Amino acid sequence: PGGRPRRESVRSRDSRDGVPTASREVDRDPGTAHRDAGPLSAATPYGYGDGFTRRLSGAAYGNGFGDMYANGYTNGPGRMPLPYIPNPDIQHSALVEYGQSWFALLMLCLKRQARLEFTNYPAIGARIILNVATGMLCSSLWPNLPRDANGLSLRYSLIFHVCISSVLAVGGVTAIMFASKEVYHKQRTANLFHTSTYWIAANVFQIFPWAVIESGLFCSPIYWLCNLRKEFWRFMLFWLAAYLLNITSSVVFRMCAMKPTSMGPAAALASMVQVFFFLFSGYLQPWSVLPPGWLWIKWASPQSYAFSIMLINEFS
Image (cartoon, rainbow, N blue to C red; front, side, top):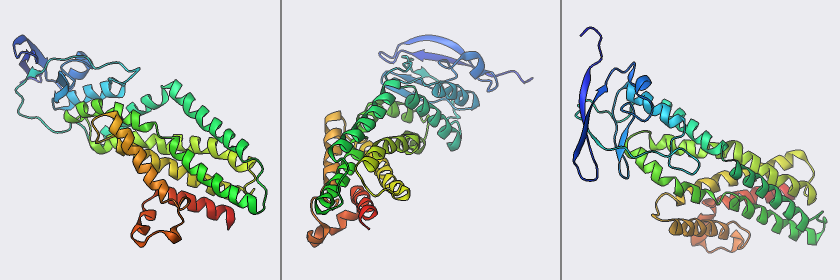
């Protein structure tokens, strides 16, 4: 009555032994709670022990989490850690699954992922150096290829090597994705975001700008220094094939990290899948001599598409 915020007594329990430790008043006014309490207070989701287990509903709690989440509070390297917060015994009959819309949660996930992607300067430098160095190394091994029968064979092997390097350049995302699983499960269990918003945010920056930059830095010296067909539109098609292979390989590597419970099986699964794709890419074993029962696999291999595009682009 009178517009005053309703207040509710909250009793905290120590999650380790279940002994009540304190009582306090929580401001339930949605217009002031997230401003007065701060990001790591009663206006944010609580958790205990191994992570968040309960989420408070309402605009105040959604906004409080939004401030914390957008500012990059995670347990990842170089980020501010999530502190231990006891599990409160809160009687609240109006719990909802999500406090914000799907689009709002997507924006929060994108903001957080942008901070993770573009503030890790050693990783950015390593990605740039890796692709430039690999491109220059390949161009020095296949320099100025002749346009004869010998050059034809060398171009064939060069294009296959471009496919291999495009895949290996993003192999590290398996370890990155696996390292982030613990934080993901804690926050997803607390319904802080949809799985779809997290997955989109995890991949969108590989689509742009990383795949554009990586494939461009890698393909440019190879294409122009190895004496491939010197037409700009053919170079753009060559780059596009490497770009698409970069993106699909990144998604495959991330998927391989989702189910295993340790990094060893995740790395083994990622390696096995990529070896399987390369085996049916069309270089090691031509499709014309494959047993009929294996022919369908070439349509499932991203490497087969990239390899075919580059071959047609060069020899048509």
